[in-house]
Length: 138
Image 1 (cartoon, rainbow, N blue to C red):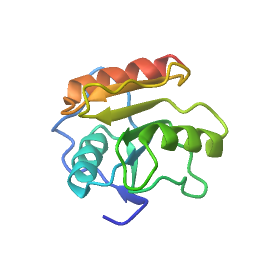
Image 2: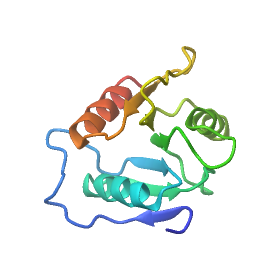
Image 3: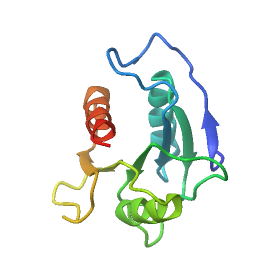
Image 4: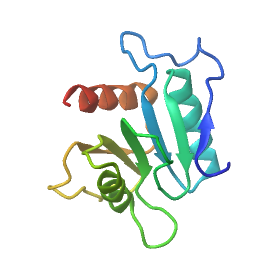
């Protein structure tokens, strides 16, 4: 999957989030696994989000994320926490974020605001609930 590729909705009837207005939300997905990228991007696109998929995070020119969804364990030395902090600096505001990990012993830094840790595998209803909560806290 090319870096920064925009994902389009595939089947609006599947996985739509009832009772939640996600249409047009700019969501950045950062993961080094093409399978995870595709699964998350498809789910979010079906929720009418504007999804940008990146293997390594950098903000596309002229695009502002409303939400960041990042794996914790990425290629190289950077973690999902590092990515979220860097993207927030680039954006100039505290973008809400969810960091995904299968590591049961992992904890996020206490000073990382408007971010949650989700354990893999993440269920769509759980992701939707976390996104709604963090976005409504703005």
